[in-house]
Amino acid sequence: MEKLDQYRQFIQDLLSRYTLQQPSHGQTEIQAVFDTTRDHYQIMHVGWHGKRWVHSCTVHVDIKDEKIWIQWNGTEDDLAQELVQLGVPKTDIVIGFHAPELRKYTEYAVS
Image (cartoon, rainbow, N blue to C red; front, side, top):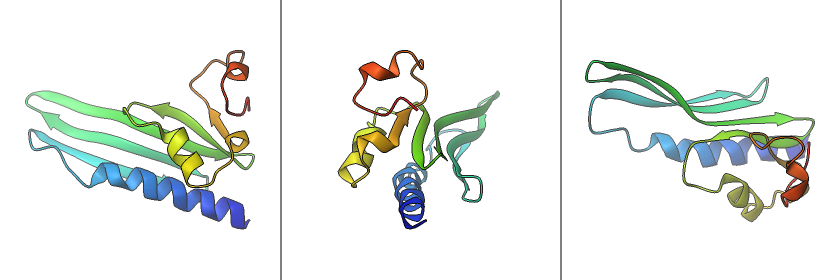
């Protein structure tokens, strides 16, 4: 359980930085959505940009079967590498948005 608690904290710390600077234009808010019971973590952009409604997920990370699944990363940051730098083994990180048959060619877990 200690490992999962540490993974939850790593994810929350990494993703929380995206909420520190809200957009200076429009009425869009950056929200951190953390479901620590079911282990789903997202960064959302919600609001209005002029007359256009904005509702998008920039980052989506889950913890499944004691592994960190990066389901979506719409940033320029290498979240997997940042997790490795924090001490998470590559065997505990899955790049979920890569096709399952292609994951074996990465340096991270297949599933």
